[in-house]
Length: 206
Image 1 (cartoon, one colour):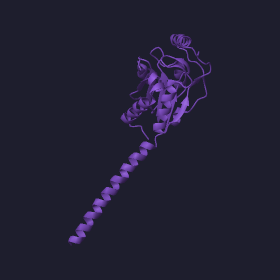
Image 2 (tube, one colour):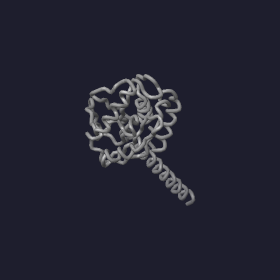
Image 3 (tube, one colour):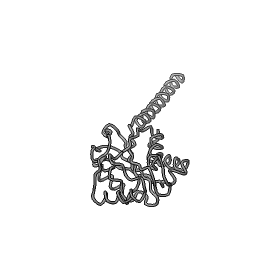
Image 4 (cartoon, helix red, strand yellow):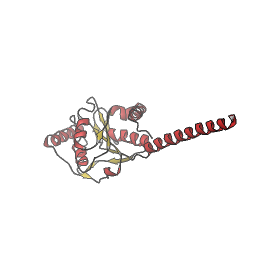
């Protein structure tokens, strides 16, 4: 009789362990099955604090996010290129913001096919560059998880998290990441650690 009871107890314990293990695996699978998109706008040429660059500050951060999440990269590229000199670009950005412009952009990608969307941009006049709005307003954001990230030299995210929440109607907008462009360009080990720490906090590492 003791042998039978022991066998039944062992079967029960093993069954529970198997169920718990299967449940954990299912939870992990659900996490890894999320489709991730990393959308970004970035500017090359003369940039504040880093001089003339061939890969934009935000582009560098976007690649780090995509690498850590397994996400797909998509760059928002305006049909009309911004000036390469810093002061001219600043003036163009100000003019567009004041006019509420929506510059035409090249190409597109179906945001609707993804579960999680990162949106990256440099902070221009405490806002996103206007082509980012052009891209956002093309799409249905209902049910999406959206995470902003920006590069800056002292302005941080400003109010852009709110602007994205207003523009991406129906999405859940999470806590964003702000990184100095000088860090993205000149201290990439530190930049990568910041990206990884942020992604771990929001539970989106692969």
